[in-house]
Length: 403
Image (tube, rainbow, N blue to C red; front, side):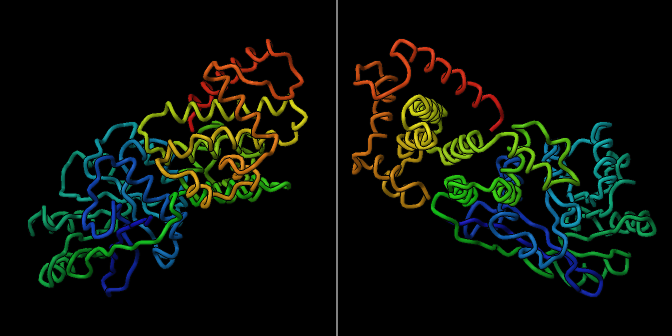
């Protein structure tokens, strides 16, 4: 699989590159965003920019301009970015409200630079213009008179005027004379598509975390650093433990605290559940829910057995026993891509005689209400009903608690 990002340079009056606008691209050869969900596009763009490409690699250390929808500006997602690396670009269709103005003021106080996209002089934006650092004036949607009026009004203010969609030399020279200081458009550079190969599962973060969590001496600090490198994972983790409000300015410590709060077992569950949900080809959560329930039930069975020190193996067995259905791919291919213990792989592929497979088989038989031989457990058979009901409750909680 591949990840794609569009990039278009922004130039100063001397034609030096001052930054890049990053653009969502759905695939190879796409010249436009083709965005049906702006929120998802920005989340994907930022996640890939940080995790897959490396933001500094995309921008050569210069500022990245990223479009934000109203929902994402008002949410805590914007706080997952470093204000020294990006300019928050407000889309032209964002309605100006008192709530938006308050939010923009908060972002300014936290050090963010703000840009307003496709400005045409609409007075509806006047209440927030004092907060805007870069005013992007659309040179296709405005005529030369309007462009000059905007320049006369703002070129002596703190706001930097950016002429966008500059298509030819005459337009560029006119913008220079009018006092515009930054420039973007086809005359200088068309957006270029950058692509990078991803692991087949498109889940490098998950696989790295699984590798670390499968170690006998798991390093939670290393786990926190992997999560921090992925904007989407960071947002989901902090939302899950409800610490988003403490993120800005103390990111490393807050993520480490969130990881420590969950603990290794819960973090393990969370990572595998996200892997299943994000790579879900069934378009339904029901199979993912069934796999999660099977996983924690197998884990609880092993916790009550002589193999309690391997209980995490039970969760892996339960979840991955349905992963081929969830991802619509042969199980053998999936297991080659994910770094799981060899014992787990052999049990799932049916090539092992490990006694641990009995706990998975019992869990499958139990959920189907079919009699099966009870493996060695430190619990009476009639008590298993309570254990299974608690697993159902825990599954419901996991699917409600913001993955």
